[in-house]
Image (tube, rainbow over all chains, first blue to last red; front, side):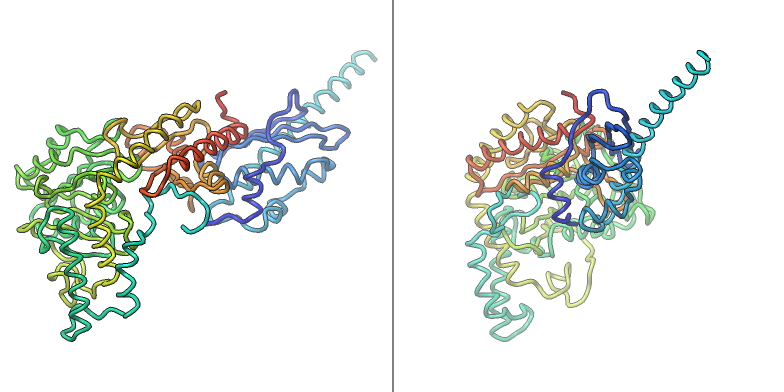
Amino acid sequence: MAYRTQVMEHLVSPRNVGEIVDPSGSGESGDAACGDIAHFDVDISENTVEKVRYQVYGCAACIAAGSALTELVDGEHLLQAARVSRNDLQDSLGGPLPEGKDHALTLVLDALHKAFEDHWNHESSVLLAGYESEVHDG
Amino acid sequence: MSNTTVYLDNAATTPLDERVLETMLPLLRAGSGNPSSLHVFGVAASEAVKEARVSVAKFLGASPAEIYFTSGGTESDALAVFGLARANKEKRHIVISSVEHAAVYEAASRLESEGYEISRVPVDEHGLVDLREFEAALRPDTALAAVVWANNEVGTVQPIAELSSICAGQGIPFHSDAVQAAGRSSLKVDEVPVSTLALSSHKLYGPQGVGALYVRDGVRVSPLQVGGGQESGLRSGTQNVAGIAGFGAAARLAGEECEERARHEMELRDLLIEEATDIPGVSLNGHPEKRLSNNAHFSVEGIEAEGIVLLCDAMGYAIGSGSACSSGGHKASRVLLALGQSEREAFSAVRVTIGKGNTRAEIAGFLEVFARVVEQLRKLSPLQST
């Protein structure tokens, strides 16, 4: 089993590593069987991914997939970012991962989607609070 | 191993010694004959095999007739486990340690599926077999017992003299896989009453694909493969003449240089262990003293080993990982679990094994890279403890 150059490049120089202080959304995913964990923080403003940071505990494929995913969504419109697929991510890593490593794609996409969901939950509670205070005031 | 990467995975395989290659080249170039042939080519090949058998026997303090050449450590282990079991058919119980090399462990498991009862003797947190527990596991119907001389992962050296003496006292055949210990511990079979002992050439700076099984005179072993009756009928098949000659040369050199090599390895190993365990969250696995002269095995808290191994490789240092995330999911090292580690701890283990050619400067360079890699991956880890 050997990793592609693109995977190794992300492993050696992973992009957008870390956490965001007070992010607009956070998400974590983990594969209980495998023991891997991915964590994504996002800052979304006017439906654009202004900033994305990630952390991974897992094999090299998970680390590289997380890094590649941050590059695919950074600066993108939220709807565009949410549409990034397993295939897009795989392509950005130069093609299919070695056998048995596909879980890396699911792991990081799940964490990112949860971060978006968290953002939407915040947004909707803000909207709802605004709506409720309007109703109440009216 | 000709590129600029520093090789620190000598437990996986060792680079071929130039002097061994010189022994092999004439046999490879001329195209060695079949040692079973009567003509001049056959005689030359037979002489080369004979000479190697003498060298390997001398290395072990054995007689040449007790040395059987095989294709390597795994075959030697299989021949011992299946061969001793089948030669003692009326006995259906086997004792092994829980830290055996897969070649012994899986052979015993195969016999278990064929109806044998297997006792797997546990080890302490350093990987050491307890003599009393081992003795208690032996029964009148025990066909064989097997304990690895030194574990291939964490490097813990077992009390083979005592274990084999217990078995000898009860008339139970005792096998030891000495693949990693060869050239490091004294394997004198005239002092240690093992019945059979497995060796591999490529862990001794010899070629890959060759090994030997020592079988003490009078010990009954059934062959695994039959045919032309080579190796006194215990291992049929035309011998790998050049490989065997290389193995013979490697064993001779290992015998001559054993002390010097072990001293050199130990000096570098101790430097490595001392400095690496200064990195926060890095701890040593295996026994603090009773360990192979070339083995350092670390757990790195909060990081998976695969990233460490690949990053070290990218920065010029080849080391081994303790467990593998492979097809079908993670596979935590059975040996590390037997030492009482959690799966997560087992996935964070790396093995650094020194060879006779490594230098102090290489170890210093590795330590720098290792610290950097650990720091880089820690930043990535959501489990970071600092």
